[in-house]
Length: 251
Image (cartoon, rainbow, N blue to C red):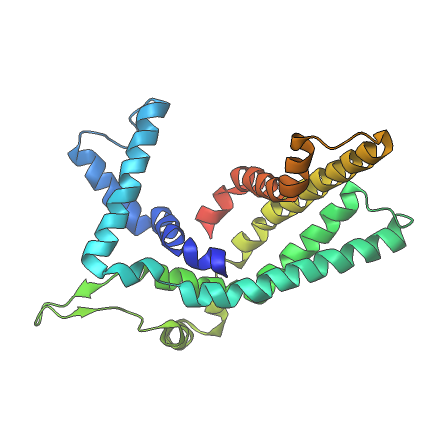
C-alpha cells in the first residue's frame, strides 16, 4: 500500500501513455517538432524524447487538472492490492505444496513453481479484474470544460460513481473487459515467481556453503545477507516486466 501511494503518479502516467487518446496528443506534439510516426531516431534521442514527453504529460496533468489528478484511481488500486497479493501468495504457496506432494514426490522443481504461479495468476486476474478496470477508467478520465460557463467537470465523480455508470451503461459483464489480456499477463507473474524461486534457492545454497566452510563472514557476505532477497525480488520483477510488458498496453 505504501508503494502504491508513493508511485501513484507514475502509474497514472503509464496508463495515459498507453491510451490511444494520449498517444494522439503525443503524435501531434512530435509532428509540430518535425518528428513523424515512422521516423528513425537514435536510441539516445529516443530516450531523451520519451523522458521529455513524460514530464510534459506530468506537467499538463498538474496544470489542467490539479495535483489531485496525479492520484486518480488510487482508491481502487489500494483496494485491489491487498486481495490481489493475498490471493496470489495463498494460491502459490498452497499450489506448490499440493502439486509437489501429488505430482513430484514432494520436490518443488521449477515446473512445479511454474504451474502454481500460473494458477495463482489466473485466479487473481479473475477475482480482481473489476477493480483494475475501474482504476484504469478513473486514470483516463480527463477534465472537460463545458461550453456553458466553462465549468470543469469529470465523467466520474469517484470510484463508486464509476462502478454505477459502467454497470448501468455497459452492463455487469463490462466489469470483466480486458479479461483475456489479463490472462496473457499471467506470464509475467509466472516468470517472476520462477525467477525469484531460483534466485532464492541460489542464496540458500550460498548460505549453506558459507556455513560449511566455517570462514568468517566478510563485508560482502553481510551485504548479501541483508539485501539478497530484496535484489532477488526486484530483479525477478524487472526481468519479468520487460519480457511481458506488451500485455500491459493491451489491458
